[in-house]
Image (cartoon, rainbow, N blue to C red; front, side, top):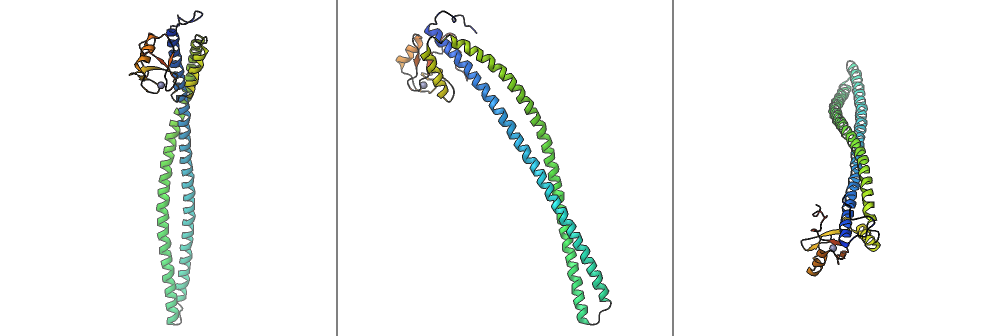
Length: 258
Ligand SMILES: [Zn+2]
């Protein structure tokens, strides 16, 4: 940092503008870092929710399979009952005394045979459903496996970024503080800068003129005012948004950030 013109000696307006601009750049960088740090935990949280959803899905599918297995057992029992009924009716058929009894027993046998067919149909159907659910579970478990890996990577990435950016932030804060110290003899400007920065959505309190307009609110700056800004003899603020305006050609000002 070229802070040669700072320290004890009083800054010129020009030096003050340059330092305000530098302060703004550093604070913007801190804002950017904090945004990154804020977004990553949200991403991790989303992934955790997603995993939780998949685990719930596996649990539900498992419960469904249990349920269908119970139904399978019930249908098999039903078949056994029907079979033993049929066996009993056939025994009775051997000893029928009249046509009426014969018809009645024959109908019963038919009925139980149909019951068996229906139960077998259900057994096939449930079997297919169970197979489908088992393959859904496999798919979900594979997804869980994949996502757990990604989540673990994200978590360590997050830890790394948090510790890295904390260090960056501390370094930047120290730099910002040093520059701020050079501006404390003009508390009004400094306070105005901080107030605008706090209220502005993009956190900018100092902006360059861009295409004859304020780089913060994009309102046109009258030519007379532009001339004054280019002279760097006074601190001039945008009459629309109150941001401090600087000339991008001023030595020490980088061309507008992206
Ligand atoms: Zn403005």
